[in-house]
Image (tube, rainbow, N blue to C red; front, side, top):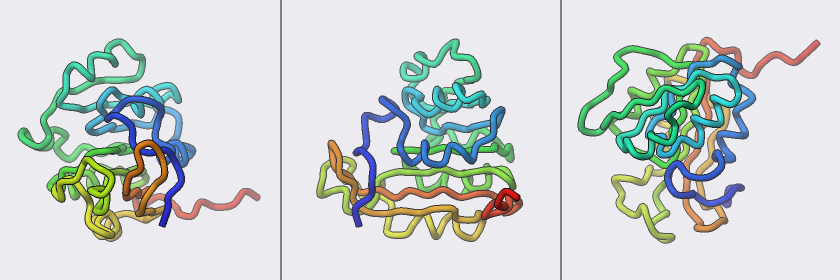
Length: 190
């Protein structure tokens, strides 16, 4: 299967992911967004520009420094792999994760989605080792892994897995899912 869209860019650099852009219409103005492992904050800036309140989290304080003073963005330097989850039972209207995988956090991320919220997740998957890095299986989703983690807790809106053409090419899994309290599909206009 060949997915549409450009290949992965440097973590956090460049334009927002086409996957995130595709589902951005599901995000209300003023929504509270968690951009996890945000790098330089391409998605944080995008959602803040749409009137959202964003919490941008990364362990790289230098990457987050570029977001200082951007209206609508609060930054948090946190090592989620070594320091654990820092949000308790807090929930967000939107949870965005791209180009990052720490399996131990997956169930926690799903629980952080508000009952009417949205999860947008996109990262590398098994098969990507053919194209280069990441190639370590610890950083590559197994076939259907996002579906198995998300499917029992949230309603799947869209899921893709496979190779994408681009520079560089990559193998990805992508999921968009909403909380069970959110009506899906949405009602058609009268």
